[in-house]
Length: 151
Image (cartoon, rainbow, N blue to C red):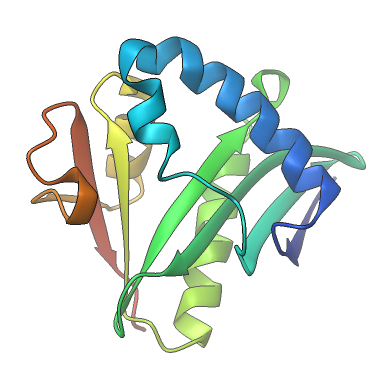
């Protein structure tokens, strides 16, 4: 059974999952890890979704305010053992619903071009590639996405 809990960045299960995500990204980001890592602080994330599979933390995601219309999706992750069970899609859907409830009309995000699985995942979930925004402008290894969520 999968259960989803809305929480914040103080949640120990979220911290546990993010620690695993950061270890993975340190390998895949290579020399650019420190550049990307500076934008991935979990301090003050007030909108976190944690997925539990059979009572164990198995996936997470978060968003933060970007502008009056958009939130930025952050810290999406599922444990290796729980991949291919649609947990990430369900976490992302829950984040989109929550953002919609708060009257945001779109979600944006950045992922690295080396994150092939992430790129496929976001495309599969109807995210469209957009021009790199904010701190990612001009960064060749960044790929930015957006999805309109207003229902």
